[in-house]
Image 1 (tube, rainbow, N blue to C red):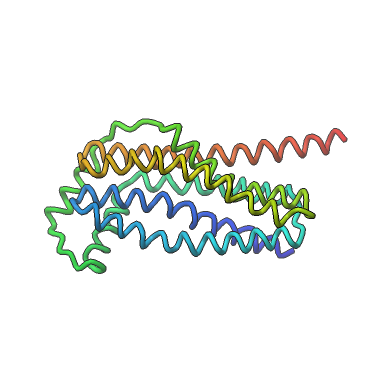
Image 2 (image 1 turned 135 degrees about the vertical axis):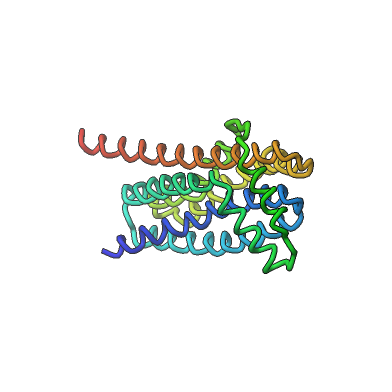
Amino acid sequence: MFIWIYAPLLTLFLICLFLVDTVQILLRAVATMMSAPVLGAHLGSIFMLSNRVATASSLVLIGYLVDIKVDKDTLLAIYASAAFVLALCHIPLLRRLPLLRITVFCFRRVYKRTMSVEQVDQAAESLSVKSDWHLSPMIVTVTTVGFLGLLVPSLLASAFPEYRATLMQTGFIINALSTVLSVLHVERVIAVTLDEGNDASVNALYSTYNISRMLGYGFASCLFVMVLVIRKAEIGFS
């Protein structure tokens, strides 16, 4: 009966974990448009603190669900729903204005940096220009692998409970692969683009990163749904 409490709670933790990971990059892009890339990097690091808390909370709750023997289909449904909601949460981020307001507020309150109305208006105008973005298969891949890396081990642990302690640790191996791909390619492109500081390129990066991440989580949701449908079909035919 408590699954109806744990399911939305875990979904919330997962959204906080992965959405903040997207937001911190987008904040860096917005800050670069305001000629403050270093402050943007630090601001992103501040937001990543909630990512660490959400990661710890998610792992504890996932481990608990495995220990109380929640069935695999229920876990699949929770993970598919979380990935779908997470993808939807990226849609409001397509509008730059909310993140611009957060950045300006933090610059003024946290860093005591004076931001003139002209500076803010100029940044808002630059961010409002239609960007020449493109879909990044690498970002989609890294996003999907990172999401699956956290959650798939719990499904394996649920299927083979006698090895659950070992299987739960395999997530770190999968996430290590995701991290290597991210550092060697994705982060390199982000760093070069932000370092150059070209408004058009940074604006395109914003859209490319956000939309590619959204599709990555949408793809992960589809994978979980496909597995769930296949399992239900097998049960129906048996």
